Image (tube, rainbow, N blue to C red):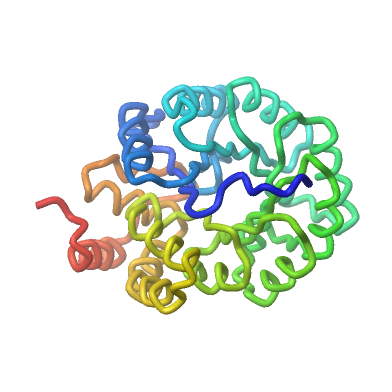
Length: 295
């Protein structure tokens, strides 16, 4: 691992907007421009928030190519390539590299129930065979599998491994991760942004930033400047909204919130479903309280 972080600060884990069962490219363009105008540091395409497991191969390629063309190098772009099938991941990595991605986000292979030795071998193989740098992604709540800090520390010696997105919701594990490995660590849990940054995370990969990128940027910049009290205050200010964005399975809540802003439809793909009425009411109230609803 060569040392310089791919980014510091805010990476937005982009939704994939749908309209009538198809990817809504006009809405996607508007969402991408909104993020770039908000001066986020990076964008993640086809991460968990982008519902990649519901996309066909053709849709995944079309989404990736379109987003990279639209962004046109204005910010760093990470593309979610991970799956539980090594060949699929390698194929996606090659496609993303060919279309100008800066890095790939590789989730731990779900359902296969890999051991730590298996994870080490799996990610080593990806890093060996791909020109596109690898960011490891640990999200046990989604995969049923926890990648230990010791495993990440072993992988840190590979020059193709450039970071870790840690979304275990375990600050103790994140602290061990930043202590054991030189890899840049990125917080993947919006409710822990300020504490994670204090513990050594270099930035956040955020669902919340879809909705209010400037607010997340302010939090990160406050912490980076050493203003810990300001960062903590911003985390508290955003706490109720953050909780509401995960009141049901993400990205259903954030898509509904963005629909209230007129930025896309609330459409998700099965097995996800639209929000229940009480969740919709909760989000609408919070958006109004934060002054996010259009006049």
